Structure formats: C-alpha cells, structure tokens
Amino acid sequence: MTPMLLVSLTAILGLSLAICRALRVPVETGPLLAISLIMVVLYAFALGNVLIVGTYVLTGLGVVWFLYEAGQVACVGRSVPVLNLGVLVYAVTGVVLYWGLDNSEFTQWDDFSHWGFATKELLVRHHLADLNNVQQIKDYPPGLNLFHFFVVFPSAGTEGEILTANSWVLFAILPCFLYRATPWSIFAICGAIGALFLAPYALGTGLYTVMSDQSLSIFFAGAIVAYWIIYRARPGSVAIVALPLAALPLIKASGALFAFIAAIAISIDIASRQRNLRSAAIICALIAAPVFARSSWQGYVSSHAIPPTFPTQTTSIWAAFSGTSRDRSQAIAYNFIDALTGLSVGISPGWSTALWCVVFASFTAVILVFCGSENRRQALIFLTVLWVGLGVYLTGLLTMYVASFKFGDEDLRLASFGRYVSTYIAGLLLVVLFCVRQISSSDNSLRDGWALSAIMVSFLFVFEFPEVRIIGAKRQDPFLSEHRELLNRVASIIPSNARVRIIVQNSNGAEVVRTRYALIPRRYTGAWSIGKPYRENDYYTKNITAEQFARELSDVDYLLLIRADQNFWSNFGSLFEGIEGVDSHRLFKISKSGPLKLVPAL
Image (tube, rainbow, N blue to C red):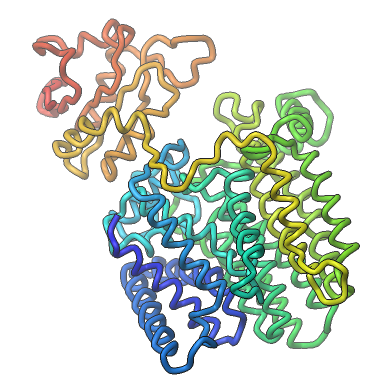
C-alpha cells in the first residue's frame, strides 16, 4: 500500500469541507455528501468516457480546498471546520483503517466474481462495463466501483487499498453520530464508533469484503440522518440530501427501493412542517434524484445491449402469490416465510428477522416515550415509514427469489437470505441508534441518549461473536496463496487479449472465480468441470465427449489445468496424445493451424 492513498483521503475531507462551506450545512454530514458527490460526478464523467479527467478534477479540488481550510487554522483558530470533532474522528479512523487493511486480500466469492472484479477491470480499462468487458455481470450499477477507482487510481490498486476505500464508505456517517458532541464526549465517540462497527460486523459482511450490501445500509441510514441534522441547522439546504439518494441506485439496483423509502419518509416530514412551493420543489428533487440515477443506468445498459443477469418472469411471480397450484414458486414462498423466523440474520448474535423486529419494536417504543415533542413527531414519521418499508422490501426479496434465481436450487434454499435481509436491518439499526442519540434533548430526563445506545450495543456483544476480526490482522485467500506463483507465471505468458479455458474438475466454481480474477483482463469461456457428473444433481459438471471438448477448444487460445483428475484424463486424455510428461504441464497453447493441437506452454 502506498501513501498516495492518503492523498485520496485528503481529497475526500477537502470536498466534505467545501460542500459544507458552500451550503452552510453542518460539517458532520460532509463525508457522506462528499462520497455521494464523488459517485454521482464520476458516473457522469464515465458516461462521457472521461473518467480519468473527472478523477483528477475531483482529487485536485479536494486537496486544494483541504489545504486552504488547514491554512485557516493558523489565521482563525479553533472555530474552523477542519477542527470539527466529527471530521477529526473520521480522518483518524480513515488512517487506522488504511493501516489495518494493508496487505489484506479478498476472500469472499462475490468479491472475486463481481464487486472486486469490476473494480479491478475498471482500473485496467478506465470506462464503464460494456459487451467487451470480461466481467460476467455487466448490468450491475458501478457507483461503488467508481468510488474505489477514485481512491486507488493514484496508487497501486492492490486489494488492501480497495478494501480500505470501501471501509471509508462504511464509516461515512460516523461524523453524523457525533453531531454537536464535544471533544470531551468520550462516551459519545466510543458509542458512535461502536455503532458503526456493529452494523458491518454483526449485521453485515465485515470490513474484509467490498460487497455492496452494507454500503446500501450506510447510505440508506445516512440519507435520513443527514436530513435530520441539516433540517435543524439550515432547512433551506435539505435538497442536498438528493446526493446520497441518487447514489443509492448507483451502488446496487435494489438501492432504488432504499432510496424511495428514505425519500418518502423525508418528504412526509417536510410536508408535515410546511406546504408551499419551495417545499414542493425540494420534495420533487428528492424523489427525482434516485429516479434519474436509476433510469440513466438502465438507459446505458439498454443502449449497449447488455443482457440482464437475472431476468424476471411475471408468470412465476403470479404462481407464487395466487395459491392456485403447489408448484416450485409456492415452495419458495413457504420456505421464505419459515426463514423469517428460522434463519439467522447477520453474523451475530444469530437472531432471526422476526426476533430483530421484536427488538426494534421495543426500542421504537422507548424512543417515542423519551423523545421530546419535536423529536417524537419526527421519529414517529421516520420509524413508521421504515417499518412499512421493511414489509415492502421483504415482499420484493421474495419476488426476486421466485422470479430471478434460476440456477440449481438457489431459489429453494434462499441463497444469501441472511445477507439480503441484514442490509435493511442494519440500516434500520443505524437510524434507531441515531434516534436514541436525539433523546438527549433538553426537555427529557435522560442527560445522554448514548447511554441507551451503549446498553443496546453491549447487549448484542454479550452473545457469541466468532467472526469479528481485529483490525490489523492480515487476511489472505488460501487458494490464491497456494497458486499465486503459478498464476503469475501464467499471466506473464498469456497475452492480455487472449481467450482462456480453465479446468477445475469437481468444483462448484470457487477456484474458477479466483483464477479469472487473477487473470484479468484475459477472457474466460466454457465450463470448468467436464465429463461424467460426480454426483446426482451435479449442476457444475458439463457432460460432454472428447470430440465436443475439442470443438470448444477451437474457440480459445489457451487451456489452463488447475485441477485435472482421473475423470478428466480418462475422458479427454486422447486430446493430449504425443505430449511427453503431460501430467506435469498446466498450461497449453491451442494451435489453430490445421487439426487441433495442444502445445505445452508451462
């Protein structure tokens, strides 16, 4: 990891201070607004195929403004925004994460198959995905990958740096939890940091992955929290909350639903306070922002003829909800209902969705009892909309399983159910904790709302917490660690524009996604496990003959054998006749002159 990453952190802080100075909004909302701005602006530059120009412009503006603000310290003193407690805590946390995630690697399947893969290919190609990209999932929004690009582009672009960039997103609302806190509010600082660690660890996937789910949680809660703070300080500037609302659909397609739920809650609160043309214009802007962002990306996907990764089938949706027949869709619906009370959500404490709802209902009651009259009315609006939104989100999640998950038994076993549900639960948790923070109003009996927050956080940590890993512990992927030398040699031999067939017999694809990631930007094609299936319902092994395999090899340039067992050699060994010591070779070049010929390359 290079110190250039700290230049990017400086730029983020500079943009945060510039936004808050220009709009005169509380500086605690700065990091969330700045990261949202970076995603939205870089997306606009990427649409114009000038992503690098946008990166240099934003980095330059951010660094210059930070230096200007820092220079004001000597002239003005302690009142300047750069010395704000929230900004300082975020900066220190960013540096700690920069140190702690150094040399760490991806270990999650989805990082290798898409989220980390897309960022790495973006660093190579410098433009949005199209049909020429080697990444398999091309229709996913690029917002998070664009922010990773912004942070790591000036440096080496290692996995540790990408993880660091992602962690800065996860802590973007940390300063919001320190709104109006003093430097001596140690309890508030610890409570805020604890709350932000709780969301990605207990209810998310942790800091060692760049999957987008927990970023949705942060921006979902962040939009509501930022509005709450800005309205109290400068009501006329609440339209700036359109930035995180626009960023949500650019992070993930489901972010549009999160954005609409947050926008509806904010709009109801604005309408309940005043009904005039200005308020109507703000409400329209807040709702239009995610609509425009979502439709813009859909337009890009359509214009580039990018096929949908998960096409939806209306007939399956109707079959699941009509109750007219007991088909596969109904079985999915029954499993989903059982999962709400049976499957755990998040890593720890292993509670089901239903139990989490009971916990949040209890804290909702506490908040409404102890809040002052002004906070109570606003908390009631937001929490009511969020509860209704949870029902809408779960319905949409069921629809996705019924209509979109069509590989193997992923739909019946509700693949990634806990992760998907915890995305909303974590966002709801952060909003609840912030509402608890507001209990410390002057018209109630609790002197510090963080007392209740600490009780909740401590209560959760009493349970077994096996997956929490100390910051600074270096994580590495076992497969890549074992095969790193081989893959580096393969990458040095195969041209970047070559097509590669990878063979990993009797595999579910875990080794393949890691190998594809290591060989970016080379294009991979074909099944990785071939021949006689290894077991009943072996969805991963393609049962083909040696002749069929030979025809498939005519379309590629290289064949890479990661794991070739007896099943492989007994079915396809004839294609390797005449090669001395064939078992010792791992890479073969496909000769295109005349009959198929495999030439050992490594």
